[in-house]
Image (spheres, helix red, strand yellow):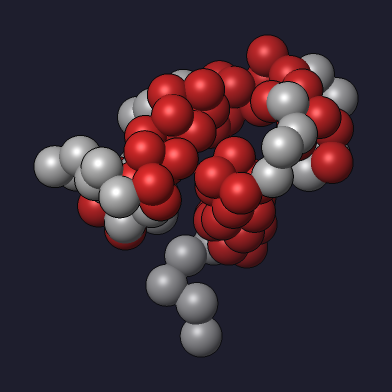
Length: 88
């Protein structure tokens, strides 16, 4: 009983893993893209930006600031930074 399509569920899972890796791992954006199954880092960047409204690099910067205690007004790790399922 999903509130989204199978593809939407896969996208949500990819975004969750990408956000975790960007915030906590010391991997480059290209390495994260490859570990998530993207053949091209540019396609991963477009995918991530389209779904979150932030580039992977910007998300990483904001997430690390938030984790360090200097939280911005709109936190990248919150649900608010994601687009709703189906808003492609």
